[in-house]
Length: 327
Image (cartoon, rainbow, N blue to C red; front, side, top):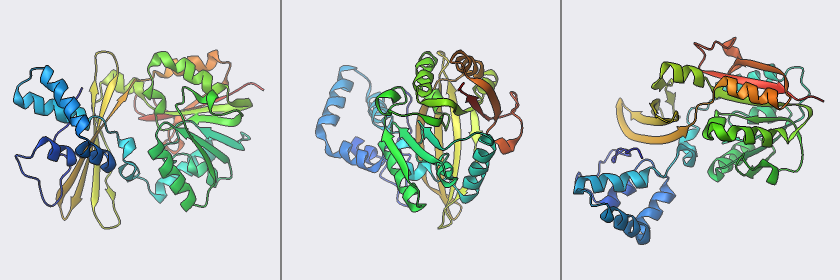
């Protein structure tokens, strides 16, 4: 378990330095507002956690830290779609649309399923290109956001909540292209990738395609990369949003991503948000070997997005794979 900073959500008015556990939980930036309200309101949760901590016989400071880390670590950036989409832009949408036009050029794709659609940032442009889009995701919050974005654009998208390790139970048809976007394949241990690909393959029509985009995990692991920075985003009211990631490499080969957001106004930080995501690096060879084992042909590896040029194993941060299924 990783300790989350306690006072990570601030405003123009800071809370008291000697705040109670409940006060700190209420201001913890890692929990969505409705979940925070639940924690503050539900005495049974606090009592149960305090009882567990009491049995551990920790010092006072250690008890407080453990309490807060247990509460705050429950939240994910995927529960905070308001923050997740802050770095979306019209320019990014146009780049994504151009990426799809290039990747799918010459391939008759009329229907597509994104099994990790999230808020739709990466695949709603497919619907704008006239492709009948379906999507699934484990997070209902992400799907709700996706529905809202699709409606705002006048798009029709068929969405279902499910784990991509159980696709067959939720889809009884095939698609011209089945995809997993947003580096989502790395959320499952390597030992489960074979089953995930098998589930996805069962939904691909003969002559169809599988598609993935992923971080260049081979580069990250080899270089033991720890820091990743994004260009700032600017909100309509002029506030600036900064995002950096700090990556902790663990002995079992997995990596914890710390997503650190800061919000600035008039040159001063007024809000901070800290989230964690846990990944299992996917070696490119593992993915390509599994696709070949399933009988896929014409397996293409390109930079993601493709506008970044040819994939360079030592320099590219992301890549995508498109593989064709035999007819």
